[in-house]
Image (cartoon, rainbow, N blue to C red):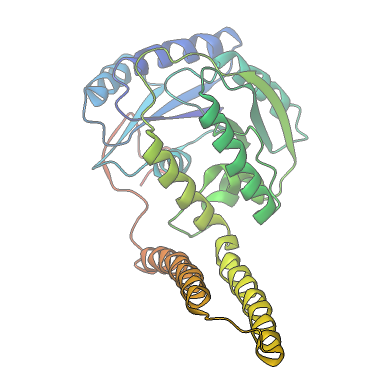
Length: 313
């Protein structure tokens, strides 16, 4: 059986369309499936729509969070409550084509791969700045961790073995795209063109995307901490150069008033120190969040889950 996990945040118009489109495609290929919608604290009528969908089809299951915990939490909630031999993650706005899911399922069914990831052949109607920042973000992740994430998305299909490996990781701050590659299981790729959103607009503003990028980088790699060391080395080199120059001018009697130089050095070193403290402070904040051991999410309600379901709690 295939479990399709669909995070939903303020997707009252897209949820019924996604359920219909995905169900139609899977049924046409006689694939046994369940759809697990995870309502991530939506403020619109998303939960009402999911309640209606669950009442009309027992294969449609729904989870509702007590508040907004974020997409990463929604993905892991779906994985923890899925019963399928394989689990797929899809967006609710239908930018991930259901037809591509069939291609992924067929590759997995051959039995020689544990992860099938869908990579973007084209990125749809994205601005040039958004596309450029995304490429920069993925390059930073790849250099820091060695995981190739060029044009990746959350659109993946994982065998039960890979799902169990992910769920065994205890950290609270998760980054699904990178973690699903880090586990190292046999992976195959398919490619898709990002479709237009069925309804509405992206829920990610520029500010939220920057926050997501920072959280993802710091939760998966310690590379930014190395910038502190690099900054220290650069400052030391500059100090040595200025020191040699000052000593030479003093010996040769060509020393001039150094007030501007002193001010410049103070500004540079102060900026580097504050930048370094900012990075260290950010990591300390993430460590503080981890050691509190709070749950990744809190579920307020479930629909169509029975005590006999695997992972039902």
